[in-house]
Image 1 (cartoon, rainbow, N blue to C red):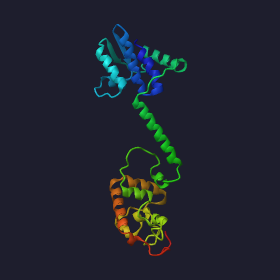
Image 2: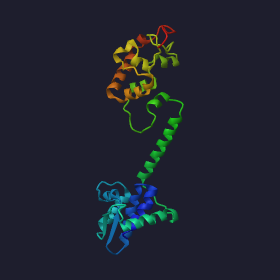
Image 3: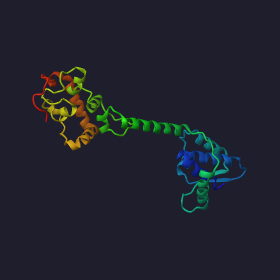
Image 4: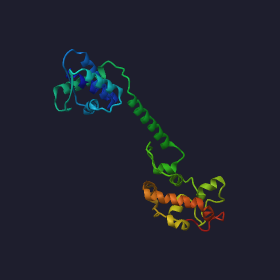
Length: 257
């Protein structure tokens, strides 16, 4: 019995990762509960042993194992360090490797937490593939190439700034809301222009980036709290002063730099 938990752990961990240790302890404890003798169960998985000691456990399998341990004082758990030449551990390694190739397939129910994790990883993987191969949102893709389910804390104004879908002549002209995509100062009225070059928005300027550092500039501008606040104020100014920034001509007053 000393080796039982080692053997199960090697086989299940290779298939289920950390979730395998939950099955390991449960299988060993169930076996020990049927033996009419004192049983010592040894494991090199500290995380699973700590879970069995915890009072804040939501995993059903772990809860069942805890109940069994409380009802049967003849079952004792112990920890041993892995890969240190302990005979039982080494035998378990050998038998586990044989079981992965020559063993009898077993069907075990997956815990809900494992399935949720797998579904999340699958969803994120598909989302990343669609984001990598998409045809829209490329300006945002250059800023955020890796998708995440974590909130960015971007305001509505920052989203408008990053996507270019805001109070910019370069965007409004597409919908016939401006007769030209030029700013009143004579240059193309896009987000970068208003944030770095336009004399009408001087109070909200960031330092203009060199061409080779434009992507880094976008990432930096949208990652810093103070910079995002300045962008919020810039977009608010543009939205409330549309007539000021609107070009009165259908052609630029000078050639854009």
